[in-house]
Image (tube, rainbow, N blue to C red; front, side):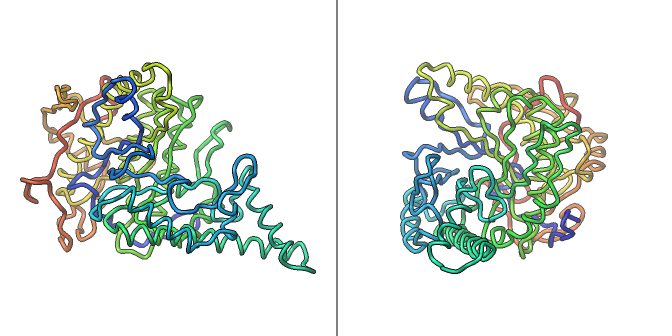
Length: 454
């Protein structure tokens, strides 16, 4: 059971976002700047979904809403200046939702949108107890608001009234914004970036295990209203450069993904929310092969629905094209090869073990087993269009090993150890394919130095 003692309600997974692809690769970095400024074209065929975080881009598969792009989000600047009232208690929720409705229709014009809609509000957290360090301004200002409103109140009463006032308003802002998004674009997957978080950032400590503190898991349990309002979860496993190529990075990522998968089962649904893990490209560029395995590979092996690589304009704001060329080299070589490897391996495991009606996940979450193609059985070669061509087949011994190490997490409507009971809910297929023909990625690869075989 989870640390709080609360069990998840289901072991069924939400249907895959794209066809029969159990592990989706998404891109959310401003590469359009590389093309327009420096004529550096970067092929993203290895990714299933693309989107640029630039405000000028609309109608994308991956849409991120920053604080200034969705309604009237209240916050304080680094200088302490209030924007939209500063506190959620000081901002009209009705006015915010009217503006947010316009913004959603602007950035996601299609009513048939089936992508990721990620809200990035990081100035404050909805739980009073989690607004520490720079975020303490929201507690201070909330207390000031109470002192200016009431007379003859004790400090204990000020604290209680301030906490309730802030949390009630913050909850309403987040909950109603998600409700608006899911009503306006119901086929998209909506959630907040960095939620859930387990605050295991103490990588500098000796004997670091990555474990989420019990208190933080309990606090996540109390955000059930947020998980019930979301249709996807978007945690982050962004690593700092100084921790690259370390075992701490593995523990950090593993525990964060596991906590997200635990939280995904808390809502009162007949399936778990899909988890898409965010990685920051700025740090990823300096990654070792181990870092890709410990983040992307770990997410796939634990049963996440996919990952999103995010980057901001700083990544491509150099006066020369050098940074764009670095990104291109990284995507077309190390990163692209590894992504192609993992996404194809996840599809093959889904097909071989689960009849393409579920995704594979480790039987033992702590085991060092990954969804990697075997260098002994597969040969992968880059092709001219930017993808990869794969030839090969799992040996009987490799299939047995796969079944020993991984189990099926069946999609909603399917059941059984091999997901061969059902289906109550059809899985969409790509044009020209029948349900008897699982959709396989048109790109895949093997590692230059093969990782442990799946």
